[in-house]
Length: 312
Ligand SMILES: NC(=O)C1=CN([C@@H]2O[C@H](COP(=O)(O)OP(=O)(O)OC[C@H]3O[C@@H](n4cnc5c(N)ncnc54)[C@H](O)[C@@H]3O)[C@@H](O)[C@H]2O)C=CC1
Ligand SMILES: O=C([O-])CC(=O)C(=O)O
Image (cartoon, rainbow, N blue to C red; front, side, top):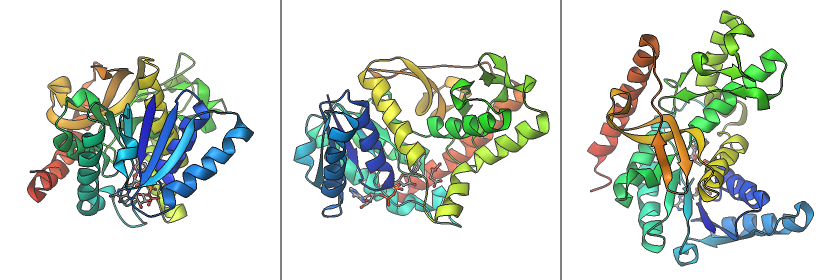
């Protein structure tokens, strides 16, 4: 099994390194446009193998797509991250062109690969890759929900004073401030979260989750990478081990939740065929309205991409 990670920056290098540590792949190829970056980080990761005991061969290349040929999964992390004061949507002009050209290249050498998009603005860059790749939407989807849910779970674990392992949660909508955490679908080892966390505390955690990416951008001057890289690696593992895991992912909707022709975060089953099923929860009126307004926002930015005519 072979995986290519495009973009050897903070998120891409982390994703490749986490994948190597999981030790179930034969090969991970890291590719970047910047001379030496992918080669250097891959070499460093490979030299970690004897210490951390993994056999996955990790190598790096500068824009040499031939070396990515025959990949089963490609993770696209190439593109600019935001800086303090920016929204993810502000990245659309630069990143759309990058995601388009990368998707063309990987499609040429790995026509059957499943594509996981990470670049921001996430929902719209996933749409960009989908339009460019011209393959079934079950094979082109985005990573955001695992990260956003992980932030929510981490904050809840801190509040409750329990292990983050014991928090199960789902979160929907676009990867931005309009995302929709769902306390009704949040449990702590089976216990409804509302029995353990006071309403005002829960509301504060939901608000902090929605701006969780921005909190890190303000601290670091660039965006997060450890949790995002690990989240993308978790998706790769679920696919290539055919685990049938249920995760929130950015998926193409064709009528589910009353929404159509849009990429949005929803719970899905991930297995060897990519998105094998979109799970439709019975949302109440308030949740439905929040999801609709998140979808409206994503649709506006998708329209911006359409009007840019990046993808013919
Ligand atoms: N979906 C999500 O939840 C998350 C998304 N992101 C997004 O992921 C992207 C990457 O973030 P970082 O790794 O922190 O940025 P970074 O700046 O550390 O790395 C980006 C890398 O992409 C490379 N690159 C640029 N154009 C390229 C091209 N045409 N082909 C190949 N490589 C190219 C750059 O040389 C650089 O090494 C950003 O757009 C960021 O907003 C970041 C965190 C979470
Ligand atoms: O906040 C950003 O720009 C990067 C990102 O998507 C996240 O960390 O959630």
